[in-house]
Length: 360
Image (cartoon, rainbow, N blue to C red; front, top):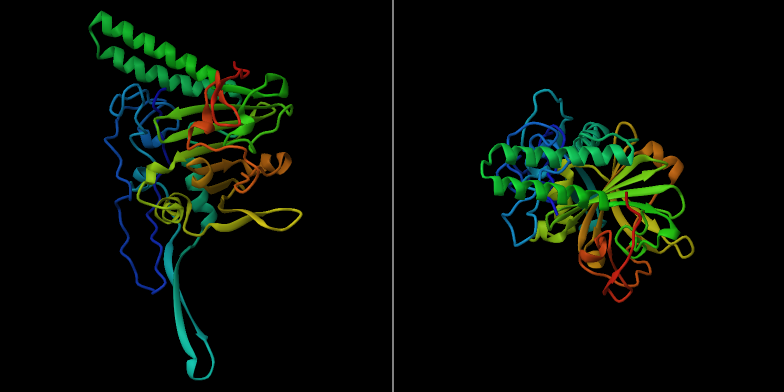
């Protein structure tokens, strides 16, 4: 599979969450996760942090496995863009009296507050979908991804003089273009696809004119582009938890997501309609055009942390699609059950079986 670069919006200042003791921390211009070397070539896949489309494979990690994206959102956030006026983020402290009688005392709590949380969210969303627009057709998204693959290999061909190496590069390019096409899935019960027992099982509906394109970016990231009536309306990013091996989900939210989308997400829950039991807790950021960013802790069920970016306008008619963390998932696997390929799926025991997806 080919490596794809991940970008973010023009960077918007790093946010630091204050601790309960109201101790101020110094703002850092260095991200928690330091990115690897970033290519500086321009084009459809210009600068990794500026593009969501593929940047070609890498042999820097593992045999036959593309390495993770060389840059990600954390790296991009560390760069200042003078053209973008970022919302002010400051620490706000409040003092209140607690207890009674002799136990009565004052407590001070502090938190970081964004002066314009919708703008911060929009900056993050715009960066994530740069190069793509809501409403794009599957063909347009495939073309964007294909352009990046071709550019990557064209650059390699320009630097290669050996005819045998040139043939190898052309073959790799053709293989990746073919793999990209296999990632185009139409959701219909007649296609007998196997995505109904995967991480994204609640993200689509069969026989509802819905489609998906999914791509793999090394061993740590999967991207899913969802379409309704031929229009792009949601992109889901499934990060292997090993991307943040030293952090739990709360640490990832504080150390990364609040830098990407803003320090004040709304804490949301999904409840069982019959018992009111909480099935899911997640964070949600809302942008200026009602675009939504949601983050989900799915490490226990699927071994991934998920970020979903949604066109809020289309979602109004389609309906909210959320995971069911504590639902009746019949089997789990770390990352394998997220994907399969167009020709590989898993049975209820988690064993690989042959399947057939509708592809284009």
